[in-house]
Amino acid sequence: MSVDVLDAGIVVAAIPGLDVLISGFRPGNAAKDIDDTVVCSIADLTVYVTAARALLKALERPPPGPGSSSSAA
Image 1 (cartoon, rainbow, N blue to C red):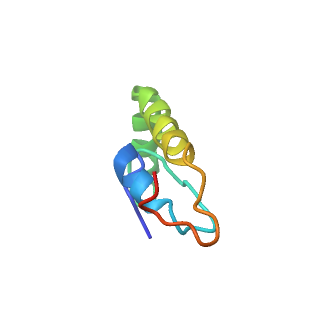
Image 2: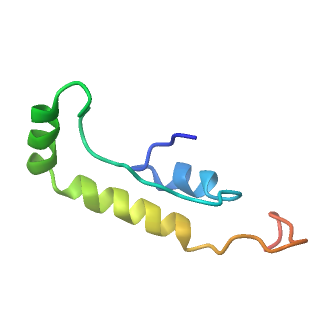
């Protein structure tokens, strides 16, 4: 599964049911242009903070336990 790590809502929706979460986030497309990726990474450091906040927000809610309902409040 691939999601937009900069959108906390999407990440929150994707987390339930995952056994492992891996973020390989990096601005740009290193496979096509590594120089552009480096430039993008340096130009806007806040993008890493945004990605980290989205991941942390998604991980705030503990996973449902056995027999629990996702609609329980």
